[in-house]
Amino acid sequence: PDRNQRLQKALNAVRDRFDVVILDCPPALGLLTLNALTASDSVLIPMQAHYLALQGVSKLLETVQLVRQSLNASLNVEGVILCMHEMQTTLAQEVVADLEDFFEAAKGTDVPWASARLLRPAIRRNIKLAECPSFGQTIFEYAPSAAGAADYEALARNLTGAPEPIPEPTKETRTSSIIEQVAEPKPQPEPEQMPNPESQAQVEHKPQIEQPSRTPSQPGSSATSPRSWIDDSPYGYPT
Image (cartoon, rainbow, N blue to C red; front, side, top):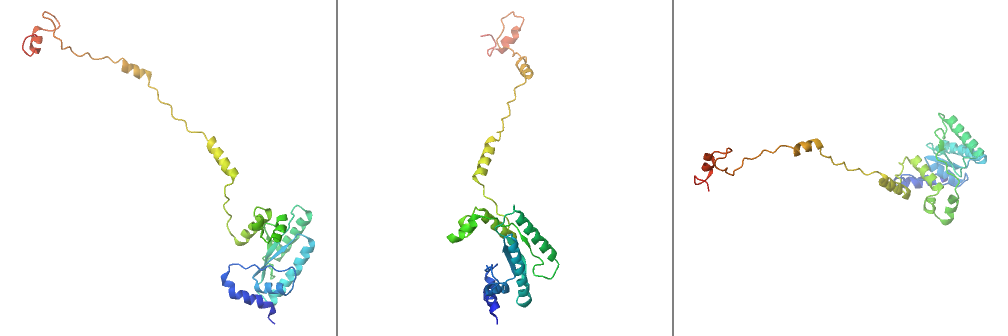
């Protein structure tokens, strides 16, 4: 009688060990899918933007509503992830417009997809995504620089609210920074101030004060009296 709740009981025993548990379900509404819906809190629906896939989503939403009414009253639809998306085609644009109108009309109603939305970014068609399972690797191990890896990483950050990583400087950015440093003009030394020629002339032509001579004058000279040169002699008379 509880075959649809076995997975739920198993996860409840280890729920505290994990932050998030993602259950990948097969593309069929069988017993495994019903167990996953019963054990889940929200549903992510991957789909390709084709009309046949759109009809399959409508059937899945009906099943989600039945599970919510009978087995899991807290089940909600988180949104739709567009896979193998070719946004340049008219068909993809029309399907996307129909989905947006459908989710907009469901807001405020009592249905499991009342808060659902188209999750961005869409996963672009990328051959690396098709190759990596054959090597037993994820896209981040097989081709981390591929467009598919970038789309899934951005989608995961939008779902979890994780911040954007700080990009590491590439060879081109490092080269450009070096070029900017080389091209930056070096500060020129200030020119030495030349002396003012007028002030220099004033200094050079400053009259020198002539010091009085200590040489005694001859007797009878009018420049110095006889008394002065006698007194200057240490013996009282001229030597």
